Image (tube, rainbow, N blue to C red; front, side):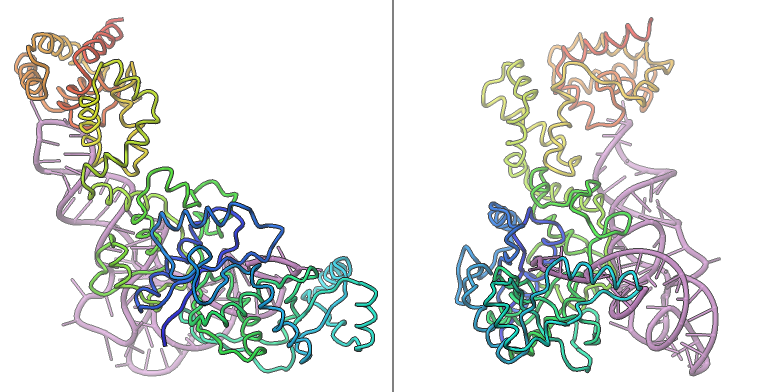
Length: 496
RNA sequence: GGCCCGUUGGUGAAGCGGUUCAACACACCAGCCUUUCACGCUGGCAUGCAGGGGUUCGAAUCCCCUACGGGUCACCA
């Protein structure tokens, strides 16, 4: 039997990292086994649906490279792929359940239910629907319907045997029927609830494996009940652990301590494969001979993936590690590719554009300058957008002196080093990296200072920082004038 | 509160009854490389696997209890 899996988001917002990871696991599983991966839009919550959410979702997935074999945009043999376009499909199943008395109309108002719930809570009991409408006679039901009293359809949970199912990650699961209330399967506006739509859809679309977040674990017995009620086979389940924030809590969409939306990663210049790579490692690990590696291409992930290597415990999202993974990908790509990726950020950077203009560089020279700058920072970027703050070193008029730089500048050898350095630089016939290197050598000879004692004052003076890229290259790209004016600036400060 | 699930270092994790079992990676610290910086490289970093009981010749690995954490209890998905 061919494996068929799906990712079934509701179109209520941006693609979330949790959703992306669930989708990724589904994708990897399908590809690994040569099955189909389906995107289905679960849009039965008509109040919360957002118009552009589906479009955003699709754009984010395309960026990540997780393409589906069937979906609302590409079609397929099991469509349509949006719940709200399947209303006619659900209806017969609903009618049948009602006629078989496996489901029944409930006329209770929200207020009544709310009151019951509160009362139960006050008495320390588990709030649960009483089931009172289940026992209405046909005549009573008809009378209420004739009177236009709004109603929902509830599923009648009967019997007392346990509901059991297999979970690939958690093993044997069982729930007591008594713990499950008669849940709503069709809302008063005639739209099925998620529980109903999802089971009908999974059944009709012949989904073989339901891979979803752990928050659905306690919904699963309801779905099992529904599969059984409509006489459909129950798919296999795999409930993957949640992604937690630093405090070990489920991510809240309002939590701004970490970047939660794929769109943000796109905007900041994370590479899609790096995001996939990191997400795959959240709750899953390859084990075996690949235990010592961390960087895996999408193809490699497909090759290595398996459900039984998914962890049970929730995984705490670690932004730093993601950044590291991303930096590994940035280091690995060709310089030309990196330049192309950096271009949009640079073109939007007014300061850089102004810098190019001031230096009167023609297009070719400007491209060459961009190339030099990107090359200089390739090993220091953890995301593409970093290029903008990084090149401030060269584009801003004055250096901003940080605390560490100031500490260096008060050292006793600084005046002597700077004086000599200014002289040697001034004497340079040609201002090139190799000549600059010679000049520094000469400063060393003249002053007797070398190593940190020599380089740090110059670095701190010209860049305002004690960390940065190769000094010769930095001085060269800074340009003679800026270098000298900054030296001059610091000399004045030190004297006064 | 009921029902579920989980608990190996700051983080991701390996380990699935016994030949270094506490890998590997991020972070951190130290050293090397570099006349500086960054990259890179090397090393350090859990005496104990939440705690307590068992089972066993032997347990992080099996069972039970407790604690703690999480998820879920909607006409949301």
